[in-house]
Length: 169
Image (cartoon, rainbow, N blue to C red; front, side, top):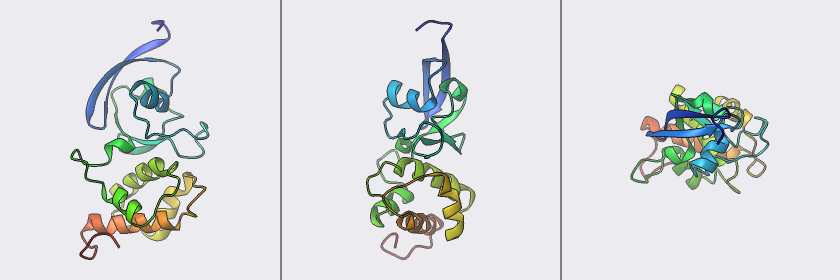
C-alpha cells in the first residue's frame, strides 16, 4: 500500500485489540469483511439505506458502508460476531430470532441484531412501536417484520428476567 493512501489504525473489535494498516478510502464494512474476514457484516445497497452493514461503534448503531475504516481509529466496534458470549452461548436476541423465526434468508439479520442490541441497551422494556421505530432503517424483504418485532420483545423480557420458565416465548 502506498503510505500516502494508507494509515495505521488501532481499535477494539469484538473486545479484541486490532492494529492494521488500511487504505484511507476503504469503508469500515470493507475492512471488517476483507481484511479481518468478519463476514457477518453484510453489504447491500452501499449507500446507508438498507441497514445490512450496521455495526456498533462505541455502542451506537453505525452504517459500516458509510464510515471509513480510518474513522474507527481508537474506537470500539462490535459486529454480529461479537454479540454472542465467548463460549458460543447465543445472545438473548439471537436466541429469540432463532426461536421465533425472526429471520428467513438472514441477509438483514446482522444489521437487525446490532440495531436491536443498542435499543435494548438503551431501553430494556420497549413497546412494539419503539421496536418498529428502531428497526425502521433496516430493510427486510422476507419476514414482514412481525417476527423480528416479536423476537425483540421476547429478548427484552428474557434480558429483564421476566420471561416465563423454559426460555423466550
